[in-house]
Length: 280
Image (cartoon, rainbow, N blue to C red; front, side, top):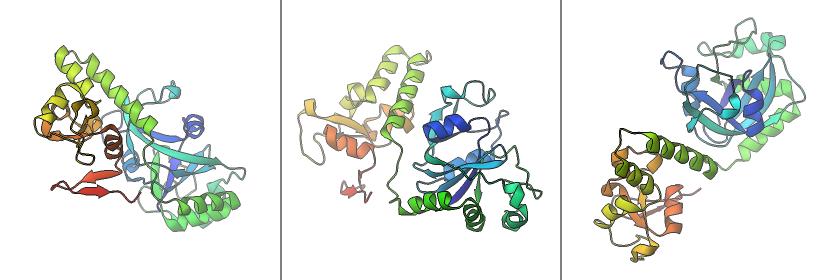
């Protein structure tokens, strides 16, 4: 388990209310931001302290790894200069009744602050430029002790998590629909190619024809009737280039139920075709 501190002044209600963290990928000038890059290091079961208006307002548990996602519409005018596509993490937060003000305890917390990327100044004031940053276990222990039973219970739940939390299907669907819309609006791609790329997401059309030129049946069920088979992308459609989305070498023929398990990471295949089953 790792521990994180997130500043949520502008988007606190939206993120906590709907159970996520969201950040742009880069600063408005296109430069990398270490506090946005931190999103890519969070793992399911990690603990997150939400800092709002000088106080720790909530403690949460990360429920997914980071994945690409459009800027939430509910942000409204918040972050007008933020990129349209950023990083999102599902998280389950517990709003606190004991709203600890870290500045009031800075004598205790100061020795536990990291030399680099700390969320607080030595005088206890927050740092506005920080979005998400890691904190040490010692710092987290001190905060949890100050907050009391509510935070202790959240950490206990995080410890009990089995590590199987992943990106929810609804988020994958939302992201893939977004990509479809982007492809459909891209007039630099010929219309027939756009249709083929979108159809390939469902394992049909030109992509399926190209996979069938290489494979003849489902690797698990041995079903060989094309009506009952889907062409599943080895590299997920959502992560592929348009060329890869239509490349027969990037596909397997699978029945729908096996395709679902493969697409969600529950099964995979070694280079020699041997089945790999996830422990999750």
